[in-house]
Length: 107
Image 1 (cartoon, rainbow, N blue to C red):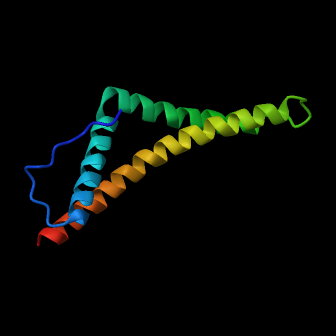
Image 2: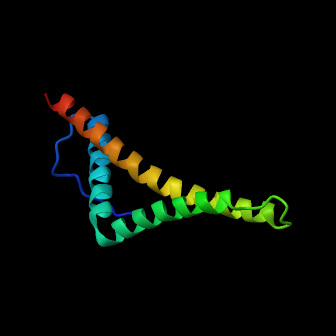
């Protein structure tokens, strides 16, 4: 569900400034989320899942008939955890970069 935001009260210099503003706002939203109880839980759970997956992969036995299926399941679990953390990080970094671009535009 996307929340529509009214920016009519802001006099943007151009479309690029509006885009940077939206990216900066999104980055701030992600930082706020990661500081919340739910965000800390989700990030902590992703880190825990990633560490558990690494350990579980190391103890897999390739002679086990279910090896491939279990390896793929663990790979998927690690992928989900890594990407959740990566997406959060990217949103924050992009937001900070957008804030810097806004400063340049407004100088």
